[in-house]
Image (tube, rainbow, N blue to C red; front, top):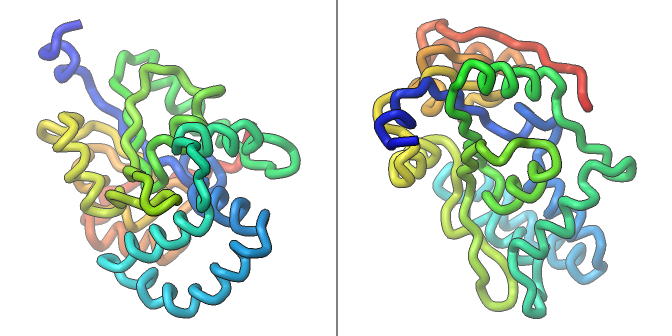
Length: 231
């Protein structure tokens, strides 16, 4: 397929956490890894009061989540991000962890595919983590863009944090956004910049504050979806 044909297709863009899947997989990964070790729990507990203010402001979030990711993955002992996230992903859909994909989300992806649309997932979670979690259930033709993770002093940290305007920046850098997209799905007001670049905008299971903020920013041009069935 030529580049001209590829970019002439309609594009459907999906957030991932709490949009296609009913959890935040990055938080779940870090929480599971930290709870698995007494030393990690102690380190996270001591640092959380310091990190909390950084989590509340956009410029500081990458620092805070990097510290927590480092605690969750130290020591690497030679393991790569793919190996670490792959090991976690192998159990993420198990009964003990109990994460589920929204059935309606899977049907929406399938409907766009049947119509010949190009499919794109843009997530704040690490790109490799999303790729490993989706590997058993999603087709390989879906492009995945997410936060970039790199090794640092024996653990993993965020090199880039794919949230808010950064989603648009990364999509442009990777050639996934020329002008605007056609369909956009998200659960969060953090994705107002993403939805602003979509002709048809969908909010998945939003709370009242998210609806109010998103409609105010986008002139009310948004459709509310209630996805509850999981598989």
